[in-house]
Image 1 (tube, rainbow, N blue to C red):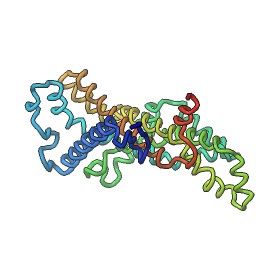
Image 2: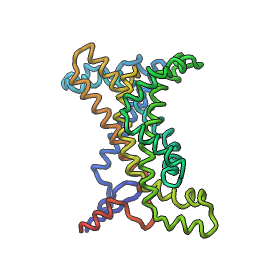
Image 3: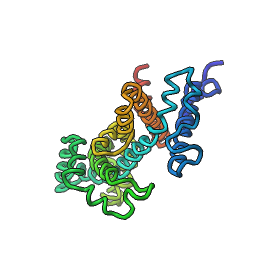
Length: 306
């Protein structure tokens, strides 16, 4: 029987069966996120299953494999840092997205606002993210102001001031980069479609909202994926303003036991798992919202090469 390949909901069905590699990937992701979710719940609620920071299974159980025993021993401490890495990434890209839409629209369709948006984008993209975080945290003194807000740093669900400053910094930075991705996507939509929308009675704002943006947002997904991956990795810069995220946690532990190679290798595996998850989710999103009758870019390139 000839192999039949089809895509349904992001899964590849080969010969009537799921691709074993993809099945293994799904199982690995379920195991990783299941463990991580249980780890967070255990620590947030004061130790539902074991003491905070303690492994679910004794590391000595895996003494036959030293590398695995090491990972079991120190992964719980790194898991707390993973939570802040995920939080900074999601908040930065989610809050930056609506700002990016406004900036991109101003860049393409604005007159005076075009130059305001351009100034913001070039200023943010032209300066290092670390320098921006230092200005916000040390220069402007945002940490002192945020520290005085109710509940900050005293309630477990409300992070300390450094985390809030980092979220503000990532939002400001991500908005500029997302705006450029969106601008390119908007300009890839045929300008005749906006003229057609105006011809049938829509205002320019409505034409952009109902005709241009629904297509542009689909075209922007690959660039948006890059920004998501960049934020996951750049979240490590928050360590320099005392945010105890994944890199900070690994560095603190390594400074005590001097096992830098092993700990940063373990932290690198966490980053890799986060990046692979983000890439897979955005790929599935691109499949789900693809414009009917319009092949994805990689499919068009594949057809041209045949």
